[in-house]
Image 1 (tube, rainbow, N blue to C red):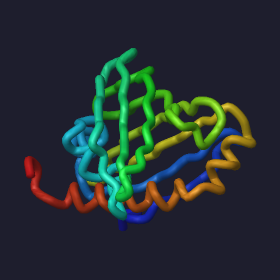
Image 2 (cartoon, rainbow, N blue to C red):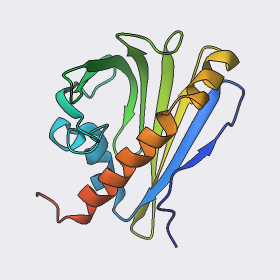
Image 3 (spheres, rainbow, N blue to C red):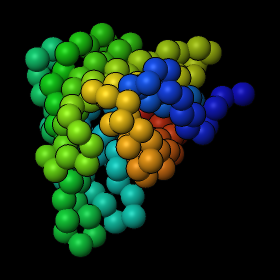
Image 4 (tube, one colour):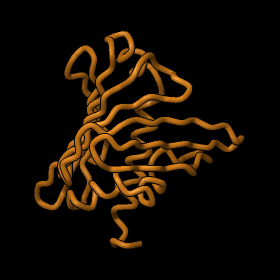
Length: 162
């Protein structure tokens, strides 16, 4: 039975790993994470928030930028640089918020493993220190990621191309 809930782990004192399985082939899940028109449908779009800016230059050395807009027109922006891309298996990139809510820059590694038509996504975030990791663990980040992944599950349940 697939895991339709987000699992959180702390593999090291500087890392958070978030794991979730989706009922979709790896290629489709990878696309949902890397094609702007698909990302805009699920990443952080909840409770009146939208993702009007979603730029992805998917290549080593390429950059990405996301800007979310809230119901009161407030904005939150993040960007980074892609370090490694292995289609459709792995993406490694940096992460830095314009208005940082944690210290320094994170290194994010996302892996996509397919088994029996289901894909398990593991997103591992490595922070500069244990203190930074712990402050992120105390934030509402886990709930936001869980809600986003629920939206992604709904998106993946629709026929491809919709």
